[in-house]
Image (tube, rainbow, N blue to C red):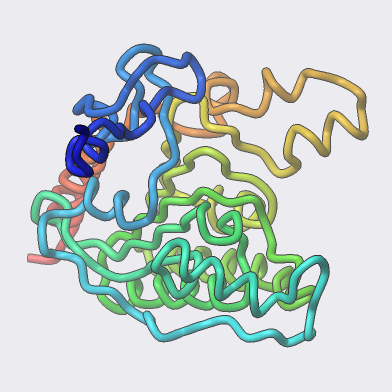
Length: 278
């Protein structure tokens, strides 16, 4: 007779396969560590927490403004009330908002960091996300350390109306204040980077790095296709196209990103040392 224990042991989890090539990637170190398919090098989505663990020195991260949460200024409701959407996103991601900010170190170099998580309402920028990003720039200016942003976003958060749109001006102005204060800003664009975040602070970096094949551009492919009835956006809205035309500085594979940032920070630090008064 088959026991319950035997029956349970026969149940296996479905295989984890690459969304692009279909290869079985479950258990592969490249996937579990970097969320990169070992067969076709497709870069999958990462959570904000995974990003922090990938880039920062262990136990170096100190989060800021964690208690800032969205309200419902318009009482907005479509198929689902906005408050319920936010609550569902919190339960799904374990985050209070789409952006995590704080300070930490990369191979010993202190930075301020802000990461936008696409899993939280598409990484949309509402009033809280905009405020957290702006405060991160202010903290970098105050501490006189570089700021690094990592973004994956579908744009402004429509449920907050005009309040979401003004975050573009707020974050762009904060990035400009960092430039004026000679605070280095490194922007990392991941898949996808579109809409209001692309049109504001994300493209103001002193150094702009993108992940391979990341979708990058103001209007998304579906919008452009609907307006122009053209497929050209599939060739133009990616990291490699932007690199060829000088809009970004480098396309860096995810497993090399931490060392690339460390090299940039080391060069910045050496430059600051040479310019310091005797």
